[in-house]
Image (cartoon, rainbow, N blue to C red; front, side):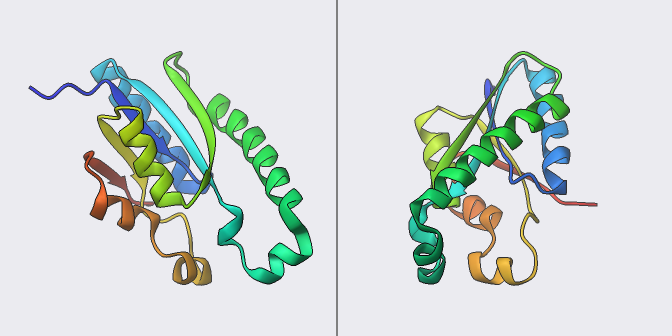
Length: 145
């Protein structure tokens, strides 16, 4: 029988993230598993040249600080259990999710399918699609209503 003790819940703070959190929390209770919530700030090298020149690396530091505050609020608003940890990472989003899952011995990834819309989706692609296609860990995707 498969044991699921560590659930990874990557979020992007879009509307679907609360739904992903609800599924993660429900499965965590049923399986007596821990939940690890992560948000990945795109690394500095993923921003365009103009953005880098205008804002510099200080922009990334401010984004990380803002993401950490958003994560604290997200956890408080969406989880009512003690076995939840949260972390803000930096880098290429799909790669960071996959690396975290492997490094931390994650048994299941639960993530949303539609965080980015419009031009962002065209430019950055689908994070969920990249994770599903390359993950060694089983992935459950949650679609928005």
